[in-house]
Length: 220
Image: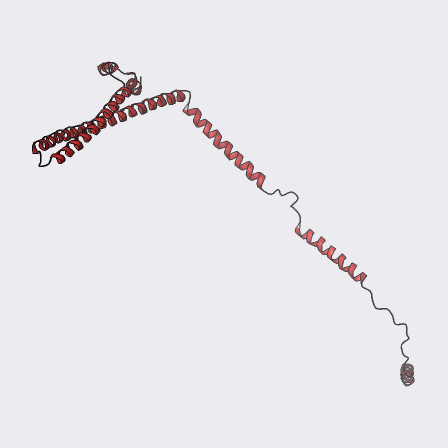
């Protein structure tokens, strides 16, 4: 049995004495009743003090004996009032201490119940199994991370081509396009009018030059 269980289940002479005494709730109720009674007595004494002081003022120098008797009663009431103030302070301190003790007892009791519940829960747990489980969880998280990275990467389908071959094909297409554009260009039409003929003097000079060339060729 744990110390907490023994604390609440009791044991020894101290526990047997406590069984016949009042509960904390009953004691607190009695203390509150006493405080209320003394508070009413305070109000009564304060009223009597004011009354005796008023009587002493009324008699004054006309009836000094009556005035002195009123002052004496006032002093007795003030003394009683002072005693009640001290008693109330003691009762208030005792009530607060009892309330704190009762609160601490309830807190300890609830903590003991919680400790027992945790112990019961932990009885079915194996630390080795927990370590294995955490390791499996870590491994599965790593696998999930690798899968996510693989899915998020851009697929390189059909990206493996020869760059030189692609450039040659592109140049061929550009040449075909250029040839097509050249075919579509229209050349200027041939003029319909005939060119002017050479002057006669020019034709005669050309004929003479031809004759001289033939003569030179024959002489050689």
